[in-house]
Image 1 (cartoon, rainbow, N blue to C red):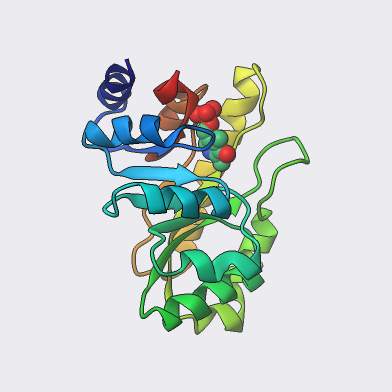
Image 2: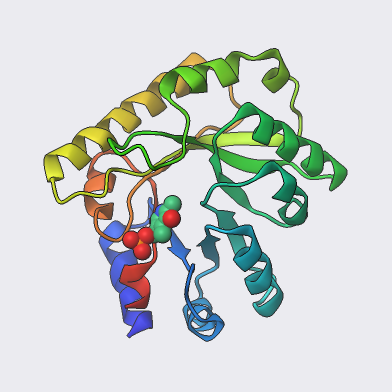
Length: 215
Ligand SMILES: *Cc1c(COP(=O)(O)O)cnc(C)c1O
């Protein structure tokens, strides 16, 4: 069942889109089954569960963090995290840079951009994103690599609304990519179980899928 779900999604999305399996709320045994299909890229939204799962699962998993990160928890994940998708402030980025340096690492980060019409979600506005990238503090951070942007569309059945949000994030992604100098800026993380095909049509190349994998 789970193996079919994963191979079905992978066929649907093709080679150029990265599937990140969201394992939050799942049993370790279920995650291990997904791992046993050969998949290695998983995401959690909370530091505590990320640390627990990392302990209990093989260490070649590439873990992504997709939920709000408090600055005081950065130190716990800095030694191993593969990508922090939920960077939503300069102070957080600065903390990630500090602990990445302590661990002799360069940590891949995505800037989370606020695109939904709801006010419950975290993320930077477009103006805040520019402000962050233009700050002197950001320019000297040597231990983080901004790889792209992440966004979550509104939780609604209104397809036009969701499409509008995805398209605006894709446009913003292009603006940022051409407006600044990055070592490697190539990830647009948008799309979840209910909307990933639409997200891909709108330019996503990384999808974060939980329910559709495990149910
Ligand atoms: C839970 C979560 C997902 C996955 O949601 P599903 O609908 O289960 O696929 C993706 N992104 C973020 C940020 C999440 O918190």
